[in-house]
Length: 169
Image (cartoon, rainbow, N blue to C red; front, side, top):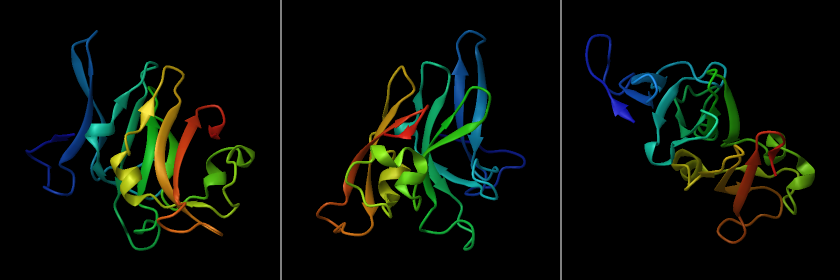
């Protein structure tokens, strides 16, 4: 995460960027900037976590962070995410706070999670919870969930694997 200053930059509004260095061309490009429109329709970026930002072998970048809350579309219940920015600039959602786990992959692969299991990992998703990637573009991360029969602090923590072809597995 880089903090920028200068003309057109307002501290706390649009002063953070994630940049990528290209050694072949000796150039730097901005991947995302705080305050810019995000991959979530109608939402803007609020923060990024650089300790779990990962460059992937295909040129994609794994991002973890938050979205600006507007009180309607984006609230404290759905403002964090893990996503992949592909080389063409498009995004794939790996996980988003407030999403049904089954909406992000094959429900049949989610084992004993109830059908209403919601990803509840505010801290986990924003921090990336030590998200790991491999050469196949797969991501492993941890998050808490809530739903029928899930007890907070007892059986609410999950380790998820995400595959670019099938989603959560």
